Image (cartoon, rainbow, N blue to C red; front, side, top):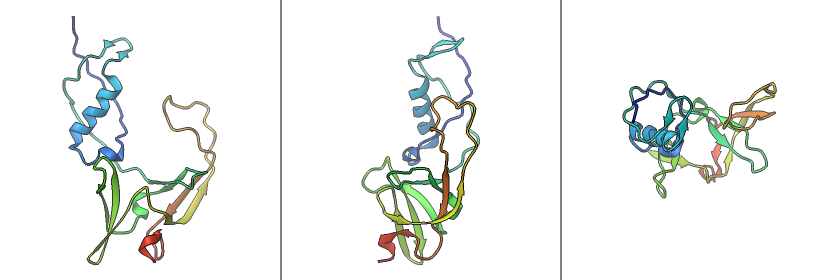
Length: 158
């Protein structure tokens, strides 16, 4: 016996999926979460029938790593303007940011060494509880920007 059940779920869509049609990308992520899994008080999920609605949605900040410290974020508004995101040339599942300057399109991705300006250093309060599967607590978070002269991938300024 099979039952059709409606489930509401908040989902983070990885940037590597932004080149796919939105509904296909979301359906794939939801299937990886629910398909062939037992859902409490519902049963085993054997198929996804339909996506009833999609709302919300925003682009998360750019993450930067120093290798030994990963909690550095650059919000989308702190990127050079005008810039946009597009599929990576080598791997269409990856993405890159592209800054349009005059007639030039200057791109940067996770392989570039960059210069950025630190705008704030925050020390968030230690949470009493943490959601399962969420990113580990960061005792220090650095926020930066790239939209100033001399900032961004160092290859732009050589």
